[in-house]
Image (cartoon, rainbow, N blue to C red; front, side, top):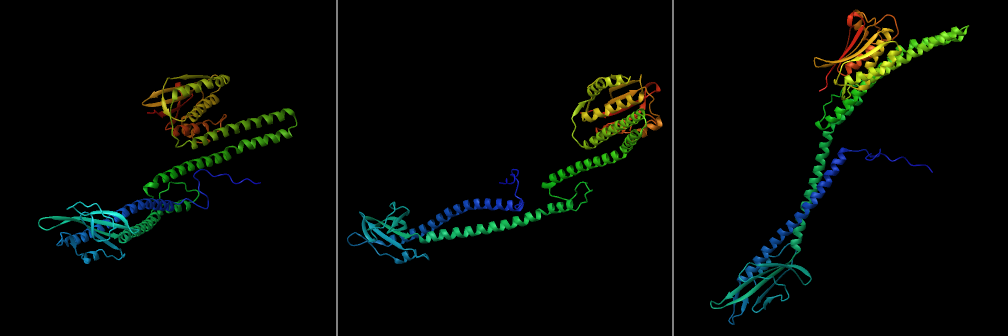
Length: 470
């Protein structure tokens, strides 16, 4: 039984259904429009029902008023009324509603009409009263009007009631609702079309951005200059920052591979030569001498590789945010760590200065730079020499110096000594990377390396000047 594929990360989209801004915007638009449209239709239905009811009530009240105006008293003082059927024709409609009426005299005596027709609670002499009811199984709208017929001496009250079935009112309400729904649907379709076109036009800069990146050569890691909307500038800035870091990393890799191929070729050739000599040596002493030279070449290659790796770290650290560190404390700790190695080489290593001296730097790389200066001084000065690590504040800057009283570097060769694979001395150990590494680390942190003659006209003073941190 085989296991299925592992679940994807939360928020990931299946390969067959890629994320689409256009579809998502249209979905949000349609859902929001549908919700608000439904609310609008409910309100429209209520308003249409109210308007249809008000229109029907006005016609019912007019009919009742026309009938009431035809009321009079007969010889016996009873209500006599001749129904004007033209008043009832006012209620005729395309919906073929049915019309009912009744006239009641005192005390509730039916004068004419349908005796079982419901009556609204009308106030004598007041406005018509309206109510909804049911008559013979059909919903009706009822209007009642209370008036009085006068003989000049007496008044006889009566109530005129007119009712109409509600088919026309319901049909009018449905018509208004359907037309509103149709307008809303057309508005939704139009909005969806407009949004689709607007999104398509708005996304063209992104397509141009993708094409500009896709058509670039692999070696072109410069910033993207394609015009994009303001909402995408942050993304383009992130892409440019990533490309800058990638370019820095690739440059560091190229430098490392080129320098490694250039510098390790000679030590490796020496190792192979010495191993071949050791294999053909006629005596043990000669074989041991060849092996010792090969071991020295391997150690030399190790030092070169360490310096090249340090250069690669310098290249990779370019552009990194830096926190303030205390230069005085870093130099003092380094001096304490190097004292045993200096004593073993017969070197008097000391420290001068006090802090704090805050600068912005990466402590590991800066420590490597200072260690390179100290190691160079120990390597080239010889036994009995004095090496001093000195820190001080000078003209708003932080200065660190490594000074020795050894043979030094001639003034005309100091400028070339900070170039990669250059040698400050024509003889002696070294691979020409120590000072260049220090110079690149110092420049990475805003500093500058300079070489000067030591005190008393002897030796070398390597000085690095850094800007003080805020």
